[in-house]
Image 1 (cartoon, rainbow, N blue to C red):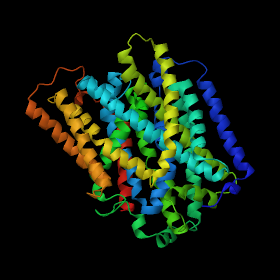
Image 2 (cartoon, rainbow, N blue to C red):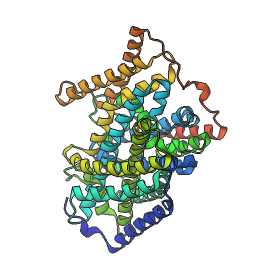
Image 3 (spheres, helix red, strand yellow):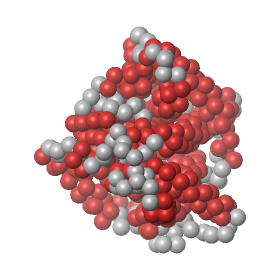
Image 4 (cartoon, helix red, strand yellow):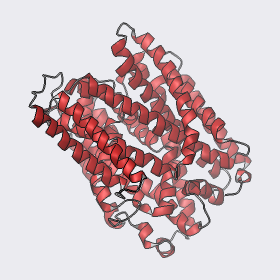
Length: 518
């Protein structure tokens, strides 16, 4: 792609500058006083449903999504949107059956649940794995995606320094203001993301004279189908059925990066309403981000990399001011994902590793060391981000890594929730074996020993890990210890009629979308 810096008008720079000033002003307001530990990590457990819902959406719709979804749709079709609507269904489940347990147990990190159900080994194991994924995938992936686009629009930028500057900006206000600064800036960023994506989607649709008939005539029918054959290289139907729920459950329930908003809720009702709002918003990416990418397949046939679809759409179709809005949306995506990942990673490190070793630290000392940890993790992510350029595609880099690493973790979490008969040794040994199997399958995929799609691998790994956990339990016949946590269906809060109606409506809209784009 040629240098697109000339496509930026002075009005674009005004829009970008205005957005940056508003974010800075909001951050200054939210960081006037140094937060203690609970304020830094959980916003004082005071977040309301609107803040939770918009923050969940903004932290998920990151720069990797803005770039990855249109790119994947341009290359393979709209089946990539299955990740999005499946997330909505997972959020509905989590809102009513899992998040209330978190709130009632008043945990600070998700791995604490595994310690209370099993023992400290599984807490540290889940925490260390989540910490690794948060830095290497979530934070570094967002920095890389943002730098990729900024380099196309601003002449003279290079990958490493651009990643470093973005990490520094997000890291400083995250360290200063904690989760409250993260969540409230995410509200602003969610609005910018939705507005910018809606405008760009409309502009792309305009290239087809706002005629759906012209779109279907110009774009290959295979590109416009959500449900793909079993041999589809992008996302086979079996992977959607058995793999995406596993990946979605980890991301939306177990991943501290996302779950921290749920943990910071002021009540179980706020959790439910916030998750419902996020679930409703997850129906929008198909129309605002995926379909424009699929339409781009008919508009651009000369691209070398799918990751350049999003910036090409901006440079080709966005008029002065709108291009600035879209780049502001990109900056919003970068900030919302990087700040979320940094804050959650710092929380995991301090609460799951430092606090047990140094119980004498008071909340103010914990908060101070938490800020130092945030800045350290920021540096590590900025160093790793440029290395992602060596992978074939951003979205594939993210999803394949999650598919091989997370299913054993989801398996042990699910066993802990549904069974009181499994001991801590069986759970720990089964999880380790699950990751050993995933390593073998990953190496086999790289050496072309098998060609099982990674989403199908995710479902198989989940099932195998559950079986291995129960096998260890059967072989050992060890009785589970009495735990601090009894997770039963009685801990789920009653679902209000209003929330039931909202959940049913979201489910019906999801089904309608599937039928429409079958």
